[in-house]
Every structure is written in structure tokens, then in C-alpha cells.
Length: 357
Image 1 (spheres, rainbow, N blue to C red):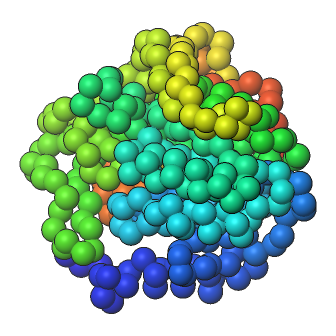
Image 2 (cartoon, rainbow, N blue to C red; image 1 turned 135 degrees about the vertical axis):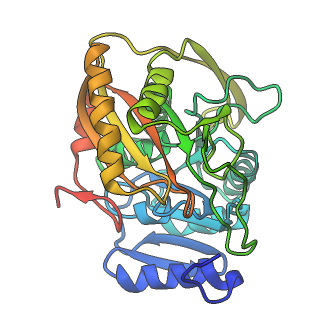
């Protein structure tokens, strides 16, 4: 393993310290417990948005703290969920009296700890709800897994919902919007190589020299299948058509209902894409893939969408949700409506995503 680190156990904190030094105008960092929060103070009455997860996926989530996105982010250890005390402390810091929306990726540790954080927040008089992101089409059932994993749509939900919060949406309006974004997005990724966790020093999983894994998770979880290496166009074709042809899927999510003060299970139907749909196409590097390769993927993706009668009206291309140094990419397609386009275009200013300001 060759990495720009000092001591593996200090890696996350030292990286956060450098991030704050580089972006003093945008963020502040609390270290005990650890969370990143906005340097500016939003107006009273704004719903605060908080997300978080294991470190190693930068710039998600800490790089998306700022105007038009998150109010705070809770970084865990490498590929390790943050703890409820981090989430509660972040909520206390950024609460502006209108409640907290926790945006949660569908991984067992994240789900459990954010649920505990919501109950702790309510016990201290802070209103909070959770919205689950579960857009990874590589997972087909819930028999042996948490269900579909939360991947690329997370970034898009943070931007669109963050803009809505900035514009004064109340807590229930924001939850409805974030849920709509989740149901409108589908993703799938591929790994060309493993990643290496600093504290382990060895690859997380093994791939042969002429082997790739389709449907990989962002922590190196097993995908759909290992297949021989293919060309960029062939890989893009597999990912894109898997997403486009994904059938009706009933998502069962557990959310805190702020109106009745208890947990409820919701059955939400995720529908296939249809001709004429307007899309945001997001091509993401897993950390070790060059931007030139991502543009090659986007070139083929645009061709496929045009042939399918799908109109790409917005795009995002780059390393926004990574897996340390993994070589590979993911594709996310998000069906847009007028509201979502308006909110996507709204100003944003964070360390890792900014326009309009």
C-alpha cells in the first residue's frame, strides 16, 4: 500500500483538519464528537439538513456542507457509520427551530444509528425526520440484505433538497421532495479494482487481472457478478441498460412520522423510465478513475439515452461519491420534473460543488 498518510488511525481527523484550513469561509469542524457544519448561520426558521456516513467516500458528505446543500455532515471512520451522539450534536448545532431532515443511505449501520439519533433528538425537543436513499438497482431483494443500497442519488438528493430548504420549504414539504427524488433515481456501478483501507493495508476484495465486478457497493460489497474485462462502451451499455430497464420495484422504508410521533413503514413504488422522460445523468468516479474515462462513459450514455427516447437535460460528471482509490465508476439516472430542475439549478456553494454564487 502506498498512500499519502501519516498514522492510519489519525487519517480521518488530519484530513478533516486540512479541509477546514482550505475552506475556512465555508465550514467549521467540531471534533469531539466529530461533525462538519456551515460557517455561516442560516436564518431562524430554516429546516436543517444533515447527512453522514463512513469516511472514504469524499467529497460526500463533508464536501457538500454549505449554502444550498447540507447544514452539517457526520463523518464516521473509514467505511464505518457515524454514531448517534455525532448526529445529535450536529442537530443541536444547526437547528434553527424548524426541524431536522436526516438524509440516510440504506446501510444497516447508518439506518440504525440515525434512528437512534432521531429518538434522542425528539427526547430533547428537536423535531426530526429521516428519508432513506435506496437507489442501487444491483440489489434485487431484501431476503439477505438491508435492501437496495443508497448510492449516487444521495448526492443529487442533497443538492435538490438542500436548495429547497434554502428557499423555505417546511419539514414535511422537504421530506416529500426528498422522498420523490429517491423514488426518481436509479444507480449501478462497476469496479475495475479493489480499494485499500489505510488501517488494513491490503485490498478489500480480489479481482483477477482480466476481471471486473458489476453492481459493486461503495464499500467494496459484492456486486451482481464478476465478468471478463470489457471495453468502456460495453461496460456503459451494461450499466445504462440495466438502469433503464429496471422494472417496477416496491421499496419498503421505515420513516419517523413527525405528525404522529412514531415509526411507520411505507411501501413506495419505484417506476421504470419512459420515453420522453427528462433526466439528470450523473457519471461518478469511484476514486481511481480519470475524468477522461468518465467523459468516454458519458458519451456512450448520452447515445443510449437518445436511442431510448430519454432526454438528458442536466448532468454531473466527476468524483463526487468515491470509494477511496477504487478504479471504476457508477451511473445514476434521475427523472426530473420542473420543480427538481429549478432546485438543481439554484445557487450552491460548498467545498466540492458550487455554481450560481
